[in-house]
Image (cartoon, rainbow over all chains, first blue to last red; front, top):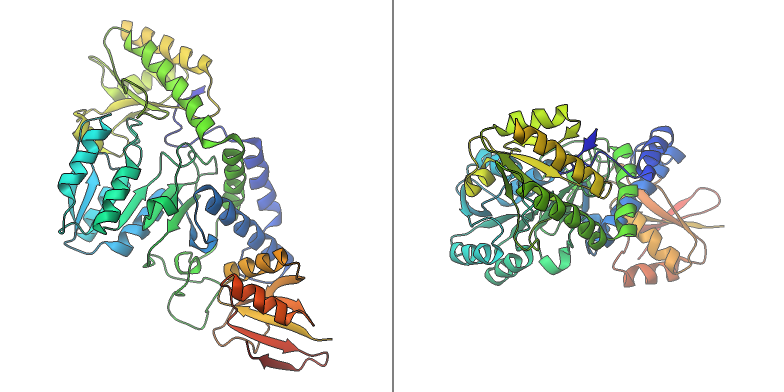
Length: 373
Length: 84
């Protein structure tokens, strides 16, 4: 099967990731839970992973790198730390439910600075209009998980800095492919999964913290054990319970893979594949492709629809052709509302460093066969 | 022979301290905080050898990684807090 669903999870992992997960299962105890060899090896493994993440994302202090179980977990912590009921939160028009639902659960007022697809200038203008003294927090989706649209994060971060508005970044689709610089962004939080562009296992994630935090989970931390409250210091404050050490060990190898290959090179490869797919697919009758005209503001994700064929049906037919894609709303109805692709959504193609042009030609040929029927 | 234990607020803090000491070529190891050295319950410390305390504290101060407390442990097991 050809795997083109890396926006959900990168399925093909570097061999080093698989080896590290296996090694962790056989050799590691729990960090912070003892002074014996297995616990201390786990501690060393976790610390090495924090340091690698701190280096890749320019975080001064590795204590501010918190392990989570996925990006949603990190976003929940970030939102819970900054947002209170009734607060006005400005977002992009392309947020995932991992942002929308926690905000709704708290009772925040979501005010999207919506703008057209692949129009970063329009996005900046929309934020300029929306950000005012009544804005309590900005939550910003760096790259749309539906369309691969790279939103102008650094320019909006500058607006937030000027207006002293706390910024939460959802880097679910950008970590590992785009430059993420915590110091340059002055973000309060940046949440990311370990299992997508960082090539770690599912169940791993990272939250970069630049602000005071409120835990959403309470329990053992291996520190300050006599206190009935969570410790006041990071990372312990946000890491209650046993760590996912196989996940962290795998993520550590994934970070090595990204650092060795370079985000720019990985991005260039993914862009090349997506441009090839967009060119090939847009020439097929009945097929509508959602692609950036200049490819500048699109990463390794592309949506399409086949006229007269619901997205879910098209996805199922592609699976029969041995091509794995995702179809439907991709947990991001806000993005579809902004782009006008409700209620059926789209078929989403997403690539990784492990895809080749051959995979894209196979996709184009399969879509041709399906669209002909 | 005296060993010193520099108690830290967390395991990660102890690991950062250890790395700073490594960079200054001060032999050290991260270890569980021995009983009696912490009032907060579980914790970690950086263990250093006799004769390196002053240089270790200077290094950690420069790195903004001062420990919570420092303890000397004597050969007979006697423990004594050392002013930082």
